[in-house]
Length: 440
Image 1 (spheres, rainbow, N blue to C red):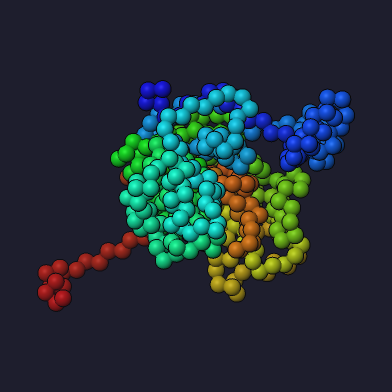
Image 2: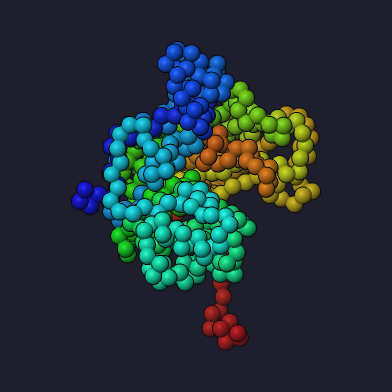
């Protein structure tokens, strides 16, 4: 394979919807006999009628092929259901492909779900040794790495506590420290890093860069945080509906294609709920669009000094103080510019959202945005409980293009070499510098 660390050739994975595991040999035999006789499987499916006519087959991956070189930091991106987790499980040899083949050069350490590979009854220290043994390491080698792993995890006080008592953040800290420091050639990290705090996420990203640049280890990274993907990865693979739609050594171009692609419930300028999507009693979004001064939907580029109101229409059946409604705005590179919601101000200024249908509006500050094509996603969550519409995961999205209006100056009116382009007032006062300096 030369310098190729991972080779994926025409990989496909088929799932049969509604099937259950029989769990016993005699039941498997009963199933086999029934199918041979053309009779209904007594154990095979739940709600068989719901999947009649061949609709019980779902291709999570279909004819996926790519190579990843040793030392690459590859970001695998895509929306929910694109096939990212299925691909990583196959590469980690947790599940087998239906078709195709994978070739891997070296040992693989995977961080796919919180607590994966840990035994709840064992302490953190004992789980470090357990993971090392699984990777084929000798106890002496694990002893050499132990202090470094514990220090990186930052949970020294709890290292001899059974991990079943760990919080999800502590799990991730220890799991990542183990995966990053033990002797593996390939590190696979799924979205679990999002569980950790911001400081640990930055620490983990820095460690993965060091592993690649300093030790030549290969990193596969999956995240909905495009800023983190762009900072870490030098390679991008975009999955849509189980197939590769972009594969490039220029990560920014892959991110731009991901941002531009229509997501769940997306409309270019205006999104409307077509049915039972986001159905819940607390807030069901019905429409989402950007409106101009007269309330009409913005369907072309505007200058950054134009009025632009982000407008959300939704239905509330049950009032709950935990409800948060707003939007997130992303640059064409996937950088989260800012988020805004109706509970940002003091409590007395919050809208009183009793049961009914509401139109909520929020104005984008004029003379703030630079020239770009922005993706704006609706966000709605029940604080500390669950997401209704989560940005970069399952949120409705619209597009807004800013072109011009960046300055009133006759000298500097084009796109700024920065993220934002605000017009900030200046003042000048003539002073006697020598006199003022002497009086200080």
